[in-house]
Image 1 (cartoon, rainbow, N blue to C red):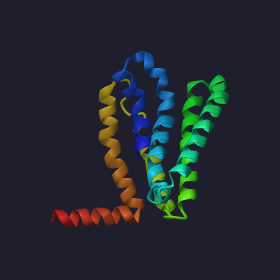
Image 2 (spheres, rainbow, N blue to C red):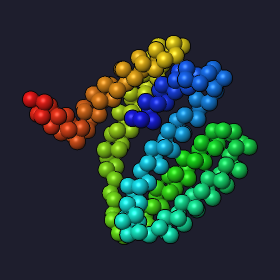
Image 3 (cartoon, one colour):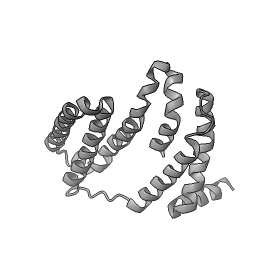
Image 4 (tube, rainbow, N blue to C red):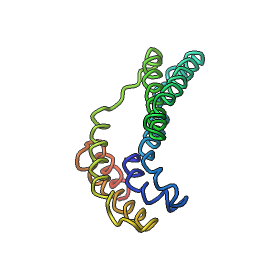
Length: 177
């Protein structure tokens, strides 16, 4: 939902916060935000390595992925420009996540709820498709309209299709009573 939400508001948000000369940079926003999301998962996925204090293993993985990032930048930037750099960064973060999870599973296996992730991705995509084109050309007002409609829409969609979200909502409502 973060990637879809920021991607939906990015074309209006970036020029409003910076200036119109940065409007063309909105093509990298989805790649950068996705990379940030994946990078933040690394500490959870590699928790076993952190707990077992396998700092050398962590260093080798991170350095290898940095080398992958540099190599991909050299290959992709001349071909597709700044988007190539953003793709290289996302790919290196994703590689680090996979390698950290794989290496850390001997110490602390982390299982991801793939079905929940798929449902969240589907709800995010639907939310994006509905709000991305709303109220174009109005800068921060467009951002506000899209965020004000997108967040509750995503909440409604995920509650409708995900049993964990429904249970969370029931618990929240029970506590409010």
